[in-house]
Image (tube, rainbow, N blue to C red; front, side, top):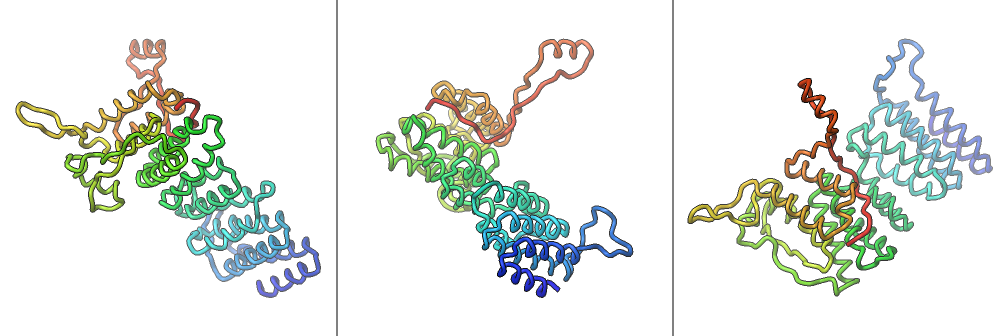
Length: 381
């Protein structure tokens, strides 16, 4: 049935009757997807991806593609959304085999109006519910991030790339945020805020390797454009230190379980860029070993759990020299990192009156803690 219907759709398209082409595809797909009249499945049942449903999927995709190629964006997106919601989502079909088809529809939709968002919202809702992760399919996010970057929409591009833990996405994000920083009135002095946007956001998602990759490429771009920023560089931690030899640090540094855990730390004139580099290294070590050894009697021993204290000291030190690190939304981000990577409990923001009443009657006081979101970083270096 679908091949005959598609032939009729093509005939309508050839004659310029786009409305009839759209209606033919939709009504035929609806008949193919209709549940049996006798003994229909209970509401909420995952329907089988049987031959009829596969025919409907093929018809909807082909018709959507052909309408989009004719410039009929609204009709093409309507059929694309029907394909996603009424076929693949309703039948719990995974995204892996369908990914190229969806990317092709997104590409044909283009950037005009809100049609692309309508389609991608449906796609991410479907893929989030069928095993592609809470934010939806990573490959599609990465494709959109790269596409939006080419369209110079730096903000939206960064949002899509930040949910992708791949090294390719991290490298693209570095280019996105550095190019965005060049539009900032502060120019060289403001690049640290853009570095922190990528670094802290990746760390909040526990994408440590992506954070390292992003920051390495961002620094390379910044130092190539502003060579005067560089002060010095050295191996960090020292190859002979206990931290460099720890398996967890070595794995995060090299992306595998082998190799040296030491890498290059670039000291710059911007405290914010130095903070970002140290934040990544601190997250790698977590609550484990501090870089320094502690003298106990006549012996030097590695300080266990020193990473937690090191993180607190790091944040406190750089909050004094980097004004935007004291902004409420950034403090929420650093508090979230303390909880995620170092086991620090968020500080309870108690109401004094409620605390007093609670203590009188034996209850617990009210309070709240900081959450993790992509930091909206304000002014300062």
